[in-house]
Amino acid sequence: MKKSNAWMIAILMAGSMTFYGCGGENKSEEEETNTEMEELAPVQERASPLRTTEGTVGDNVKVKVQYGAPSVKGRVIWGDLEPYNEVWRTGANEATFVEFDSDVTVEGSVLPSGRYSLFTIPKESGKWTVIFNSEWDLEHGHFQYKEENDVLRVESTPSWADESQEQMTISVETPGIVVKWEKLVLPIVIG
Image (cartoon, rainbow, N blue to C red; front, side):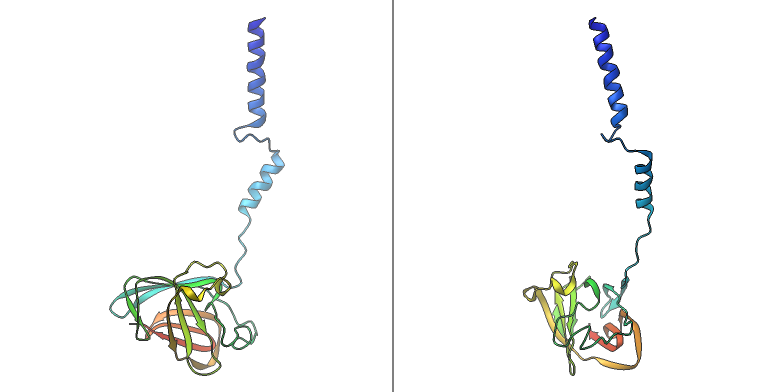
């Protein structure tokens, strides 16, 4: 009798292991197919694609910039979508970040090497404020911006092009970093 009880327990245990499988779950074939389909579903494109640009400035300082590239889409940008005299994340979605592999001067002021979020304050006329903030990994851009984390604030003089540029770009070129969007051209002098 003892041998048959041990044998029955072994059969029951083997059966329950088959039922639960390795993960302790019993998924139907349909559930497994749905899971596979979810994993293979295409990733939805961002309205403002994530862009990365790299280059060198000054005495071979390596610069990397990552930003969300918004488009005009028929909207009034300056003074409306991006209000004057308010902090703008200088891009879309998460905060734009800039990384320098060596110390640099920005508009004549020293900025230590490192990674920074880049913000600007658009002005209706005159110079714009350019901000380098130590909190570079902000998911929601200016909504999480805190002035007390500013490492450097400088001013830069924008110019206005005749032709409108649909999608925003940030490039590493002479004289440093250049932001272009709609009719704005904002050169940030870096050496």
